[in-house]
Amino acid sequence: LLREPGGAVGVISVWFLSLYSSSAMPAERGWPLPLGGSGVSALFVCLASDVVSLCFLSPASDYGMKLPILRSNPEDQILYQTERYNEETFGYEVPIKEEGDYVLVLKFAEVYFAQSQQKVFDVRLNGHVVVKDLDIFDRVGHSTAHDEIIPMSIRKGKLSVQGEVSTFTGKLYIEFVKGYYDNPKVCALYIMAGTVDDVPKLQPHPGLEKKEEEEEEEEYDEGSNLKRQTNKNRVQSGPRTPNPYASDNSSLMFPILVAFGVFIPTLFCLCRL
Image (cartoon, rainbow, N blue to C red):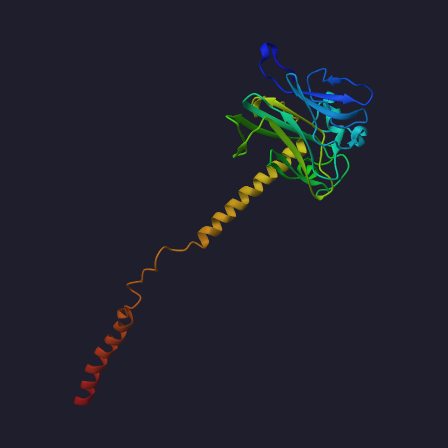
C-alpha cells in the first residue's frame, strides 16, 4: 500500500498516531491497520508527503478481540476485531491530488449484536450515499468479515461514483451516517489506485454462498410465477372480435323445418280421408 518506486501511485498509505509516541507509525506489511484499539488515538492518511488528520475523533473499541472473525485471514483478524464508532455521524477526510481511478474499501464485522435491525447506518462519500442501510449482521451474520468496495473516478475536477457526479476539490470526505438503529462504525478502511479487480477478496463463506443461491432461486421462482400470472391476465389490444357464428340459428331451425314439412302432408292426407 506504499507509493510504488518511481513515484507512481499505488495505494494510499494508512498511518496511526500512538498514544505512547509522538511519531506516526506506518503499516509494516503495507496493509491498513485497524481504526480501533486502546493504543490508537487518531488516524492519519497520507498521499506522498501530505498528511491530514481525521475530521472527527471517535471512540475506539476492541470488544471483538476475543472473537475469531470468519472469512478473514489470520493476519487480518485485527482489522475486523477493532473498530471506531460514534453516537453521531462521523468521518474522515483524505487528500487526493492525482486524477485517476480509485477504490475505497471499508471493512466491517458485527461483534456485538446477534440479530439484524440492531445497527443500521449509511455511508456517504463527498455527499453521495454509497452504502445505504448497511446492516452488517443481516449481510453476513455475527463475527464475520464484510467489505464494502466502492469504485470511483476523479477527472477534470469531477468525482464520479455510482453513476453520480460532483465537483471535486482535492479531498474525499468519508462519512458514517447515524441512523435509527444504534451507532455507525467502521473497523478499517483504505483507498487504492486501481479498479475493483485489484482489491484482495475475502475468503468464501459457505453459509453466505448458500443464502445467495437461495435468493437467486427465489428470484427465479418469482419471475416464473409473474410470467404465468402475466399470461393469465393478459389483456387483448382492442375490442374482442365477435364470433360470426354466434348469431347463426340455422342449426336450431333445421329440425323445426323438417318436422313442419312432414306435418303438413300428413295433415292433408288425413283431411282427404
